[in-house]
Image (cartoon, rainbow over all chains, first blue to last red; front, top):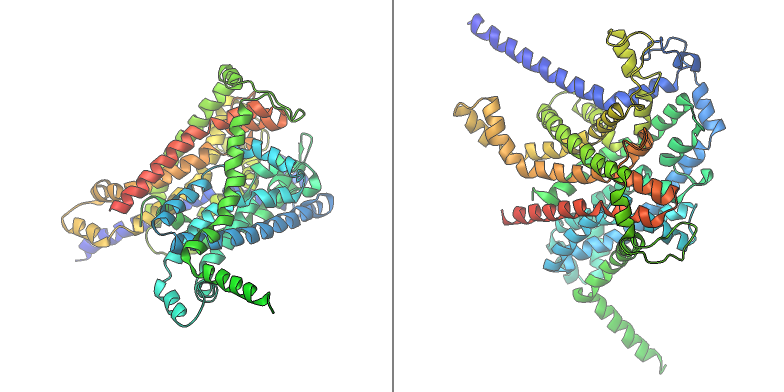
Length: 287
Length: 309
């Protein structure tokens, strides 16, 4: 008996260790740059710039100097505010455009809605790198170059298509009977939408809010193209371009500011990732 | 008094119109639709126009030059290198991503303690802003303080005081760019494959086990075939994202050393925006379009097949 059990539990132990090892290796790969950023941001420069020192540990006591530099000698705080401003504005525009559009595609347009929905989803795949040159001209024509408004106006091209698609799916999952009952109860068509359907769609709307905000915070190409004034930059371009003086990289402040801006965005995004991914799989394969 | 009645009538007719789905439908869709036409459709047409002019940032009054920009860039070695690089980066990173994502998805397709934290750490590359994350890699590949070099020296693979100069040599710089692309897209593909894995009915796998199928047999004869549509979704979207990305190359190498890691989008940026040659830049960007178009057609096909099933 014992002999029969031993190899089996041994095998299980082996499998579990293997499982653990596989995951550990992957985590080292995915999280390493961030761990490395975090350590770097608390190191003294003399520790950092000695190739003989163990880079993974503190060879000299940790310091807050790098952070002090970030917040007093650079426009970092301003960039954070800019990023938040653009994010909030983009969220507002996206909701205004995508909620009615998603509802219209889900309820009013029938078979056409389905086709148009996929069409709008495909617009999401048009990358900024295809359009940034003519878009720069458009931004100049509108007199928005070098302002945050250039980003407020253009980012919804990325957020609206996907949000419309997500909300369309969401509205479809809300039973039609609820609206019909509301109409019988004397609500107008619009009233039924605003009072009955919208409250039920709150989870979808929250997803769209987070999605649009994080996407604005992540965007790089348009920001790099339209904004060159330091004070008007967002975090995603301010840090890689303005924290480097000539050829001199201040690695401590650079790593600190990259880490500090990445993590909140990552946490927000993490919460909606499931819905985001189901948007993709719904477009392609699983229904 | 005399006026009130027509106004009331018009109002009630207006309200009546708002009750009709025929009216409400287009009305609801119109703002988003117009916005997309104005800020995606128009710029796209404008890109095609610009690509056939000699427009520069300084000179808004461009003249038509036909296909001259295209002829010029196709003959330029830097462009050809960029075109090739774009494909090399995309294909090699996607192959690696799919294999790794498959392994990782299998490892994640069960419950264990702390799964939420593990998932978060694994998803970081996708959910963090790419330009900031790539700065982390820039530091990892640093010419003198690279931690990879430090480890290589520590285990004796590199002599003391020696460096690899990851971003200073064309071959290693390509490796670096591919590494970052793999790192970036791995979480995305993993989560999509995981969604597919969890949708495979458990009784099929149980039945196969009863019939005596082992791990590998189940993997290659059940899981992978059933996952094929999901795998294609991951590949299609991954390809689009990698193919059109500019942030990784821009932050990591600026296309260097000597334009050897340039890709279509970064080259378009340097020629069109930095160099001010809008016509040429727009023409280079347009080379992204055929691949996007093919990917879009394939996505539509997948969607249609899924509808039939």
